[in-house]
Figure 1 (cartoon, rainbow, N blue to C red):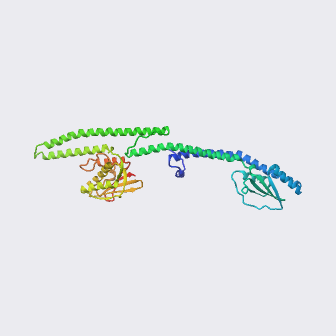
Figure 2 (figure 1 turned 30 degrees about the vertical axis):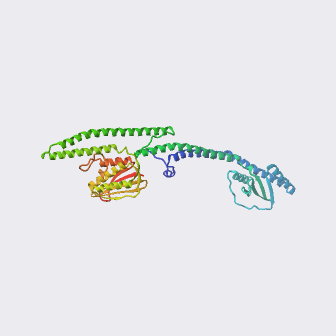
Figure 3 (figure 1 turned 120 degrees about the vertical axis):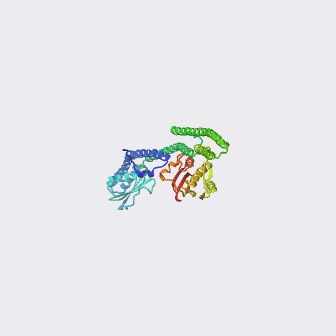
Length: 441
């Protein structure tokens, strides 16, 4: 038993295109690796250095306070504060009897504020505040002491670690650079695949497609070369088949012509009149079968697909059916243009209309746009076809009516599929059979 492991809800967030998925495959490991490297650097080297710098500031403040407490005289106090500024670059000022006013703490990027707060808490066990935003060059510390509040101005450069932002910039910059290079490279590779897909789709619709120029990776070049060889083989096969059938048609029609001429030259004879009429009808039936078979095998491949007004084409088919005595209603939009082989598509729709009018008294021909396709429908009020036989009637020479060759639906399906579409048989709203043609826009 095959196990499928995955999280279904992730699929809706996954890119649909090959380019997007490939870039995601490259980007996720890159971000993970860079994140691990940043965490290792931040958690070990950066954290250690930052804690040591913060501990040094807290220790110098504690040493200065101990010196100040040795002699409460103003002269000694001023001397100690001046020495702290000269030796430690710490600007200090005592506010005797003041009480600390609490204010909201603002976090800044990096570990400096957290490490300094931890060092002050560990060293003094007294209330304090830190201001990192008022002065961009210094951090302002207010420490509550029994004697009052000690204001300390510490240079930010003694706490800042420049290598952190340099390392962060290197990680982000290198990731972006690698991602851009990969995106450009993969875009060129995907362009060749998209060109191959468009050519295959157009060739499948029966359109003239020039050979693809192989480019990109070796596998993509191999696929393009294989497509070119396949296209050439199919065209060569179709050409050989058409030439062979042209010869067969000549060979078969020659004896039929002789038979028709021989029947016409027979002397009048009342006893043979019915036999001659039956033989003439058989010869005409054989000629119709040969013509239908050749049209089916040829598949109208020589005609090129061009923008065609489908509305006008359906009007022509409807007019031809009405001239034959068919009661037909037409419902098509006024301006419906598709890229079609006009003669082939006219033949396919005419075959469907002829099949319908042979079995029904009323036929409805319609067309409508649905999404990225056009639906052409042929409805009739005849007896219809059972659901279990609707696929078999598309087989060549499969006819459910006397006098038919069984090639009408086969030719219609061959033509529609050559346009990249499909033809289906369904129940009709008129009570008979509906033939639905779906063509891509």
